Length: 327
Image (cartoon, rainbow, N blue to C red):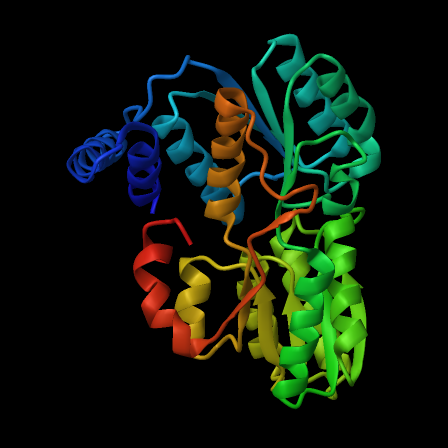
């Protein structure tokens, strides 16, 4: 994907005839394939600061997309993360102190991030928000937001649950204070015709996640679907279902290789993909476009990367990409 995007961009910048365009395209593709820049713009430094915890495959995919774009665009990329709002804000301050040329941030906990993002904007650092915080992005001074609208994604889940004839659903929130997670479950509840209740778990303790879901399924046999909000938690829900002897369908937000396999063998019903690779890639690439040409996408509105509902019918087609860690 990155090589193709690099080729198209290289052709648009360097080619003005069919022959020249083809040569530029081939050259850009070769450069990107070996991790070298496909452009000759300055070696700017961009920082990506997310609310990721350790070991989350979703954010590994975001980082991979950001790195691919950085390689193509001759960018020195700094990637930092912390799942605590205050610590994430301190990492953003570190990036400001380093006088980075561009900043990508997530706003899962916007109250913690508001002041430091304002500092970045005041310092003349262009900011793009990604993944979470679409409602706050423009207010905080960001150029644009890239990700899925979490409420719309939740509504898509509610619609899919209706299509599957589900009646009682458990929505598992693994990170308290994450506004995007609240929006997902609220969106699902809005469009779902049955009953949906939230279950808050400690996402840093996977055995606790499994035990909490298992206890709910064991105590309430009428629950016929469980929705987790991240790919790693889907596996815990599947194990909880098996231990509890429940017949509930397990569904999840986000996609990775394990989820694709589980969709294929039907231990999962469906997944909602928000294309994390695209979030990382486009955030860095759009910062480069802004620095190079003052381009801004979105027209003041978020640039949506999802939601896309993935089922067993799609799993085989996506296996190649999930196995290489880009979907």
